[in-house]
Image (cartoon, rainbow, N blue to C red; front, side, top):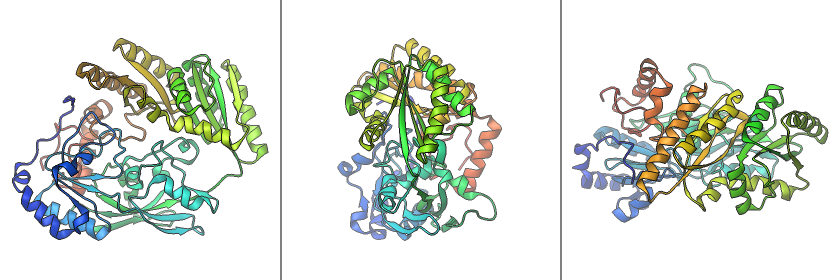
Length: 479
């Protein structure tokens, strides 16, 4: 295991009371809602950022908001750190625990409580998977717009924590644009509600503060989300280019022309080959980069939008333009894209980065990324949400070689710094977690970090919620 990223030292007062803590939690919860045997804790020792792992003190799996509140009151009283966990798909280490922490998993809070088509909203528990909302309302002509590649497994609570996006966020926005309200348990067990099914709320935008807070302000147990009517039609089109730079420039010009497709996804040659070998989606293999551009609306609307996009693509010497001819072909195109991370895992270990850059800098950042990877003697496959500049370079390495793993982490840090220096930011949808925690000083000044930490302290004075994450360990307020 790599040790480049440090964790806070466990609290001795908590470790010394482990047996008493487990006994107390046993009294608070039904027997099947508590995990504490060492072997049973192993599945919770890490998330999708597998380079780091720690066995937690215990894991609680509540079924109700009241049970969450009871656990939080107890942990707050005794200063026990709590790490919220959804499905464990975090790619930034956001759900990795430590030895003195209770993991509070929300996977059993998995009910869709209400569907309200009149107001185009749904009320769901935090453990509901992203995709299950669309599957539930799809038969009635609606869907939930954010669609991370992990949508089959990832849960709404985790999506809120990281402000997740997905391929279709270009038109419909990320989680914060589709979240109307939450029920949340504060660190001391108090239950509050922010927002609701109405479109706006008076006072400070605390809902906007909670979305993307990575489980450090409270535990979201329920959410009110926006439902959207399905479009009349949708059509993905493949555009193949000679180089990644040409594809990046084309994306910038499409958006610059005022054309907003529902999605623009990017793959470079290594990613194309990896995804095609897995999904057999019909991707062209004779190009250096590929854009999946999806438009939607009536046939006339789609034709008009595509005509403008094709004209721009030709100015960038597009080699291939391939419109899907059937629903099955469209499904295959998206299967290849959404399988990219899993398909890459078949050929190598990898770290998935998550920086965002201005569209006008896409070509520049792609070129510099290649230079960084070459300098470290590594390989990279680029596949990302090009329409909003959210880059996901997959840095390939050998996890069994500590030196190779260290080079991969260092290369990833340089790529993230490059994104910031190009006018972008450290994360688009994966969050900071532990992965980017020590890069926060590259993005923010000391004064800016201090202000953010002051807000966090207002919710959690003793910093027991997800304590090793987001903010650099040095310079934190004394709990």
